[in-house]
Structures are given as structure tokens and as C-alpha cells.
Image 1 (cartoon, one colour):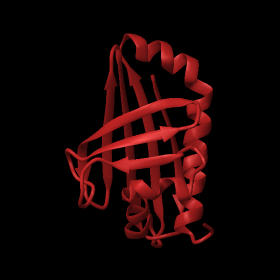
Image 2: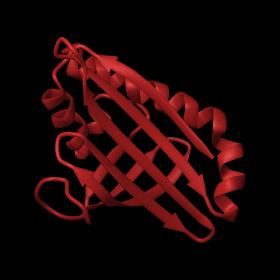
Image 3: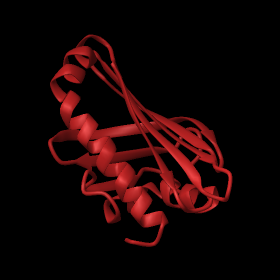
Amino acid sequence: MKQSTTVDIAAPPERVWEVLADVERWSEWTETVTWVRRLDEGPLRSGSRAKINQPKIPETEYVVTELEPGQSFTWVATGPGITTTARHTVESLPGGGSRVRLAVEQGGLVGSVMARFYHGLTDRYLATEAAGLKARCEGDR
């Protein structure tokens, strides 16, 4: 099951990317993340690993599988019967703003069941994350 949200942000894509790619600071701008710990050093890149703790969701380790600097990254978490894929995309808007798309997909036998169980929570988390990112990039947080 795929779920996503899109938000327009009155900030340049470079600023949005700076905030989005600094995953260890996500808890500063969204209440849906308790903490993120990178398991490697340096800038976010393909192969980077991070553990994420979120309210109401088991602690999860993600691995970056795709990254286009300044534009997008995808990371994937796997477990017995479940694959969670999260995509984060930033695009430029006319006039200097940005459009961000946050998407989550649950796959696998357990993932299909969990996606139905967590559907409402995932929608709320995506909306909260989009609003927090917008506020942080526009200078409100």
C-alpha cells in the first residue's frame, strides 16, 4: 500500500534539501520522530544507514537505496515479511519555492496487514512531517 502527501514550501530547494537531508535533526521539526541516529558518518548518500524511533512505531533501521543530491532520497527498512520504502522528493517551483513529496509504501505479507492497521497513523504522520518541514524551512521553527 502506498501513501503520500505533497506540500509547497516558500523556500528555495537548496534550503529544503539541507533540512530534509539532515535526518538526525528531524526530531527538532516534527513530533512524529523521537530521534534518528546515523550509523555512518558524512553526508547522506546511497548506502547510508540510520535508526529511527517514532511514537507508536517499532524502532526501525533504514538504508538509503537511492539518492540524487539536492533532489531526492529513498530509504528502505526490511524485516520478516515486511518492506517499508520511504521516498522524499524536492522540486523547484517557479518563483523560487519548492514542492516536496513524502511517500511511504508497505510491502510483503506482514507489510500489507500493517499498512491497513497503520493507515490512519501513516496519513497523520505524513501530514505532520510535511507541515513541520514547511515551518522549519520557512523559518517558523
